[in-house]
Each structure stands twice: as structure tokens, then as C-alpha cells.
Amino acid sequence: MKIFVSCFFIIISIIKTSASYTPVVMYHGMGDTAYGSINSVKTFLESKFPGIYVTSIQMGNNVEEDFLSSYLMNLNEQVEKACTMIKADVRLKNGYHSIGFSQGGQILRAIAQRCPEPPMKNLISLGGQHQGVYGFPKCMGTVKICNYIREMLNFGAYVKYVQDNLVQAEYWHDPLQENLYRDRSIFLADINNVKQPRNESYKINLTRLQNLVLVQFLNDTIVQPKESSWFQFYEPGQATVVYKLRNSTLYQEDWIGLKKLDETKRLKLLGTIGDHLQFHVHGKWFYNEIVEPYLSK
Ligand SMILES: *[C@@H]1O[C@H](CO)[C@@H](O)[C@H](O)[C@H]1NC(C)=O
Ligand SMILES: *[C@@H]1O[C@H](CO)[C@@H](O)[C@H](O)[C@H]1NC(C)=O
Ligand SMILES: *[C@@H]1O[C@H](CO)[C@@H](O)[C@H](O)[C@H]1NC(C)=O
Ligand SMILES: *[C@@H]1O[C@H](CO)[C@@H](O)[C@H](O)[C@H]1NC(C)=O
Image (cartoon, rainbow, N blue to C red; front, side, top):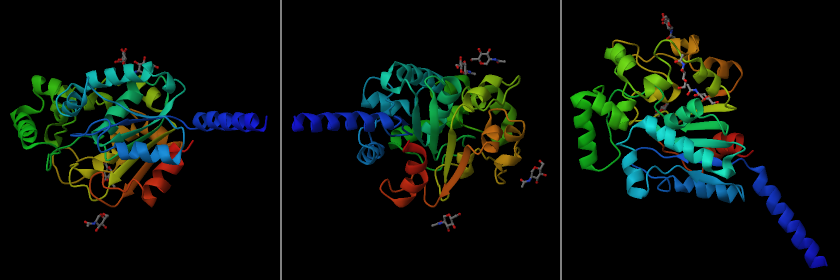
């Protein structure tokens, strides 16, 4: 009887703990895979929060396809496929938090804006390129892939074929050709609601988030400019001076809801010392600034 009762309580407490953590969906960056280098974050969360469900989006049927999808795929298609996977996962039906690594940050944001059901609660973007990049100083990948990407970008980032197939072109933002970017960017200009008429629905959907947490790596040598992680970018017509988010039209006219999130204290701009994605999964910063406040409930 005694054994029976304690078993009963153990089972109840297991059910209780696993039910008390919100599931987490991760999205990997360029040159990585769903359960590649970012798996250490999954393992860490599972050790801190027993019973938590942590999953990671894999594009394609295997690791190779997933890896290649971080360079060669249409991001709109990627968002749609990820949306279908999230909807099909019964364990996510009551909502989830998400962590985007590098370009995975803007892909998850697109999911929040286009596919807000089941609800994404907190979105944590680690070194994302929310205003795109202008420059490709370092490339994560094999020499062959990196040369191919550079050739395509030189050929013309806004050429339709390149836009439709090259991930890095789909968030390429040329401040010397803002009109071209606005008209031809099939992904970033769309989710940033740059075109007119603006789609009010993007704002409604993004502001359903509990928190939008944007981490900038203050010594980032990969994201150009690094402030893109906070939606900040070069003033049009040049590539030196970077404007502040709260001073931008995107924010002031509130095309996607950043101002609304900010005014309700749900937009978090965090900076951390270090190069691109350089943080210790087991370190104080990650736990105190990210895990405890945004993933523990
Ligand atoms: C916003 O979310 C709704 C579902 O709630 C979806 O039908 C709509 O297409 C989304 N908006 C955009 C612009 O994708
Ligand atoms: C906004 O986006 C939704 C979903 O893609 C679409 O159905 C709707 O027509 C768009 N509205 C405008 C004003 O473009
Ligand atoms: C990293 O960035 C911080 C903040 O801008 C700066 O104070 C620091 O000197 C930088 N560290 C290195 C090694 O460049
Ligand atoms: C904000 O924008 C105004 C007008 O575009 C500009 O004059 C001002 O210098 C900007 N301020 C900052 C801090 O970027």
C-alpha cells in the first residue's frame, strides 16, 4: 500500500512537472542542422526543466537536406512547411516558446506573423538579421558553398531566380537601392511590411507574442551591420551610419507592431559581449537573461 501510494505521488509529480513547462521550438541558422551545434541548448533545457518538450525544426527529409536548406531554399516555402509541422505536433497545441539562432530568428518571426496558431509565446532571437544584411564578411559553410553564395549575390541579389532560391539573398538589404529592395525582396521586405498597402494583419499577429526578445552580439563580425539584430540598419543611401530602432519609420508608423510591443514592455533589446552566437549555454548570462525570464514558465 505504502509503495503504491508513493508510486502514485511520483507519477502525479511527473505529470505535473512536464505539464508546467511551456514547450520550446528551436530554429537553426546557416550551416547548421536541427540537432547539430544547437542541440546543447536542448540538452541544457531538458536538464534544468525535467519533462520539458524541446523540439527543433528540420527542413527536408534528412540532415543533408536540412543543412542545405539553410542556403538554398525559398524562405516563404520554409515558413509554410515549418508552420505545417508546428500545427501537426500535438504537444505544441497549447502554445510554445521559440529560440531562433541567427537567421532562424527572422524565420521564426515570420512564423509568428503568418502562422500565429498555435500561439508562439516568447520569441527569442539570438543574433538575427531582422533588417537584413549588406555584406557577407564571413560565411558559415564549406568553401564551395560560400563561393557559390558570393557568386549569386554578386550576380544580383534581387534577380528573381536568386531571390527564389538563395536564403541569404532573401534577407539581403541594399541601403543604396532601397527601392529595389522594397520591390524585389520576396521575404524580408514582405515580413517587415515595407510595401504599401501595409498588411495590418502582420501587426496583429506579431503583437500576440508575450515577449519579443532580440539579442545583439555586441562584437558580431558576421552580421553586417550587427545592429540588424535589433532592427537597426544603415540610413538609406550609404553604408556607415546606422539609425536607432525607435527613430525608424518601421517603428514610428508601427508597420509590424514593434512600437506596440515596446510600449507594453514586451520588446526586449538585449546586448551581450561576444562575437556571433558566442555565449556559454551553461553560463550565467544565458540562464539569467534568457532561460529563467523567458523559458522557465
Ligand atoms: C495572421 O494570422 C492569421 C491566423 O490567425 C492568418 O490567417 C493570416 O494570414 C496572418 N497574416 C498574414 C499577413 O500572414
Ligand atoms: C494580408 O495578408 C493576408 C495573408 O497573406 C492576405 O490574405 C491579405 O490579402 C493581405 N492584405 C493586404 C492588404 O495585402
Ligand atoms: C565588444 O563590444 C563591447 C561593446 O561595444 C566593447 O566595449 C568591447 O571592447 C568589445 N570587445 C572586443 C574584444 O572587441
Ligand atoms: C532621428 O531621425 C531624425 C529625422 O530623420 C534625424 O534628424 C535624427 O538625427 C535622428 N536621431 C537619431 C538619434 O538617430
